[in-house]
Image 1 (cartoon, rainbow, N blue to C red):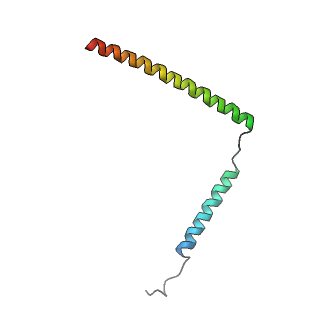
Image 2: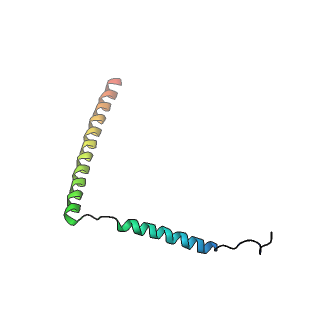
Image 3: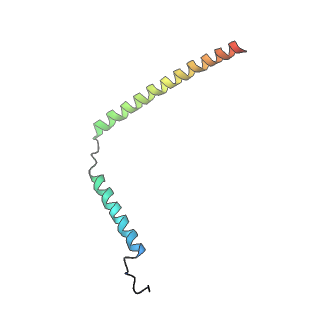
Length: 79
């Protein structure tokens, strides 16, 4: 089969451009559907996340201290 017999399709660059355009159109369409929170809701949720993160950090710190003390005591008994 010679080169003339093959059916010519779009070039690689054209196919890439079309694929990227399709991806952009899809993402843009989905991005428009996003409902952004208002300022009061954003502030309330930010404060909630900060408080929960602080409490979780405090919990981890206390548990770390208790486990460190327990292991120190255990090692003291074993030596």
